[in-house]
Each structure stands twice: as structure tokens, then as C-alpha cells.
Length: 94
Image 1 (cartoon, helix red, strand yellow):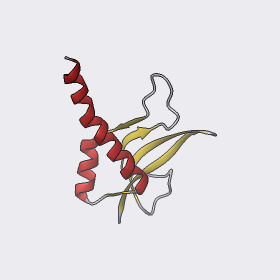
Image 2: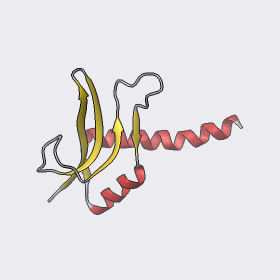
Image 3: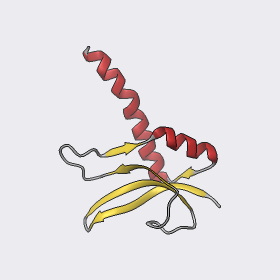
Image 4: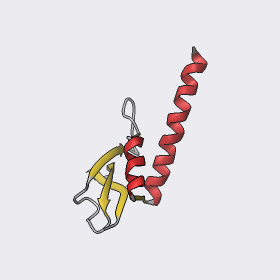
């Protein structure tokens, strides 16, 4: 079967929170999944984090053959850019 890295919708009406999961492509959107890789909260406020992804596990699943959907590919790229930008900011302040 084909593995997909995709979003799973949670939260309440008009307040979505998504989990980034690895699942079989034949499973329902909010159905069974193999592993939770992170979360995405498009309406994050205050101390809430908008995006958190375990990029090491994403790399593993991609190496095994899982294909990210277009939206998750965008979120993964955003997380990679944030990861590389964070250490630069920390060294600039020191």
C-alpha cells in the first residue's frame, strides 16, 4: 500500500487543529494512522506554537517511501527553514 504524510483534522467547529500523520492512502482522513509526526495550529495565539514537526521522523518515512501531500510538503519546508534560521539568530545575539 502507498503511505502518505498528511493532515488529520481535530479541534472544534471553526477552530481546527491538525496532526501531521503517516497513514495508508486508502484510510479515511481522520482514521487509522501509523505515526503522529507533529501538529499544526493555523489559529495559534500567544504561547501556542503554530507548527511543530519531528523532521528526523519525516526524513525516515520519506526514505521508506511515504509521499507528503502538497500541504504537508509546504509545512515541512516551512519547519526546515525555521530550524535553520533559529541557530543563526541565537549566535547573532551572543
